[in-house]
Amino acid sequence: MSGANSAMAQQPVSPCQPPQSDEYLLLVLSQTSERHQVIQQTLPPNTQSTFCQYLDDTVTRIGGFRQLEDANTWARYVNEVVGLSAYVVRPTAATSTTSSRAYNPQPLGEGYAVLVDYFNQPEVASEVRQLIGSDVGLVSYGQRPYLLAVYTRNQREANSTLRELSDRGFWSMVVDSRRVTLLSPVVNF
Image (tube, rainbow, N blue to C red; front, top):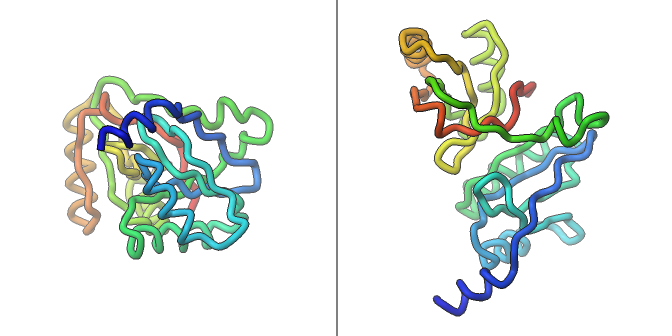
């Protein structure tokens, strides 16, 4: 065990590259090079994958998906068959002109965040957007991706949104927004 840890310590993990303007990324929480190798073995030959750092997580970055449906299919496969958490990152419209700003994860700050677990079903984002009447973001909380329904400093607003979402059958929660990292302010699935 210590041999594996020292080997990992000797190999610094570089930051992940953002998606190209016409590409969807699949990020798989890998943590170790052994898990990265397991993921690589499940992928078709010639699939672009790298072991890199994304926020506070070590992930396998799988690029080259041109269709959202293809990326989501692989995310479900990795979740259900391989047993690792995976999520899809979509480039924003601004990626082609300002890629460094478009892919710039940021902590939310003080307040309350209402999160929705979408269980790798991207259509949930449009259902949440219709219900709350505003854009839905993508965040990371506890090393997992969630939809961001509301970010506010008003506890009543957060609790009201939580009740509304829960009453409609969404798996949602209110959390301390200082522990949430914004991945994308708007998701358009």
